[in-house]
Length: 125
Image 1 (cartoon, rainbow, N blue to C red):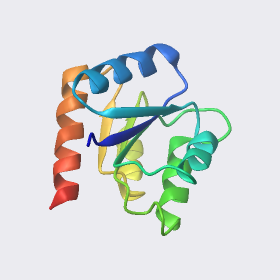
Image 2 (cartoon, rainbow, N blue to C red):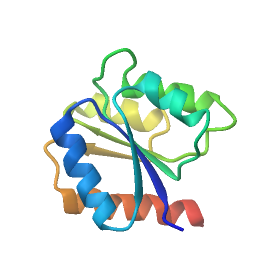
Image 3 (cartoon, rainbow, N blue to C red):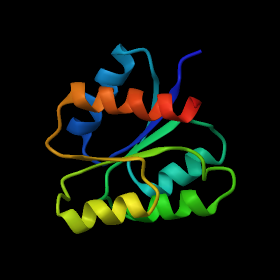
Image 4 (cartoon, rainbow, N blue to C red):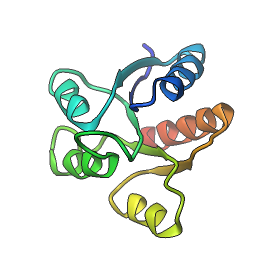
């Protein structure tokens, strides 16, 4: 069965690129446009990985990660932050919140795929 990935991104063009790359690599992909939608989605669905933007309406990606890590049902889902926020202090903060990886926009779809594979492989260990 294909691994399931939730993409939380409000930019339709970026979302399309991510979905295309992941689906063509054999993953089952779900999408939400913000953290609030993602939390609602996760009440009924299980995923193997979450890729989230930081700057989104209603709930930021960092706020989403905080909520995920506080919930026993979602705290072990690995997360990757994919954002244009590139200051060192922001990267450190994102990783300190519990994200497994931090990818800066603009990004290479091939690099994103490689990092997804690494995070999912670590989860299996």
